[in-house]
Image 1: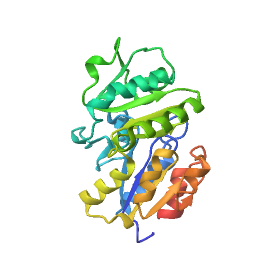
Image 2: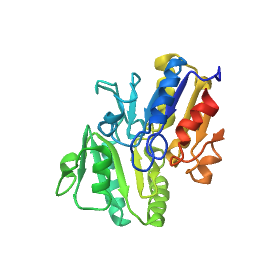
Image 3: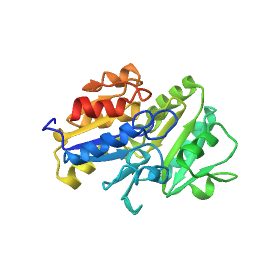
Image 4: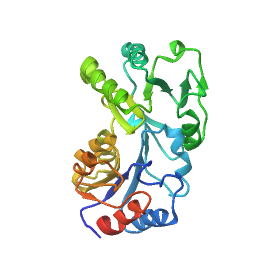
Length: 266
């Protein structure tokens, strides 16, 4: 066992689960092995917390669960422990900005998900993954306050990249905009990022960040790599993400999560 690591924080999609989103027996056993070794295990994701509840029982989670890239943290009983929302004054402007770039907007507010087109791109896929459906609205006027996350959705990677650059140029430090998937741009308040989740867990469990390991595959995982003492990138990650990590494991189609625990943590 690596004596430095006292807590492992893991991303979900592209990391903990393979493309079919179903936990493998080897991954479940790897988390059990962490527990037996006295190492805490926690999860974080761009998904809403409600879309992470299916992992609580099989992984026997006892630690906080951080959804919305840290924008909302719940306990295993689904009580909200922490919530960070986007400044109300820039929500409508941000949505208008995405519309101008031909990028579809979704809104997450509280535990609910709102869309203007329930048949729009990736809606059905996201509903299947998170195991709940969005609420359709004609417009976002009535749900534009206390917004936890805005998602820009497009299969045009160049359009998303332009929107991301221009959002940062326009709003600067007032928001965070990172990719959780190649077709999603996650927009949250600047404090809501996975690096903040490392800080939160470090404080809650009195574990210095140097003794925390993180594992992920996407751009939005880099902030937690930067805050933790040891980081692991998935083999399916882009090169920029891999270069930000301490080590690289195999892909999520080749038990990369479990292999990382077996090789680097235990």
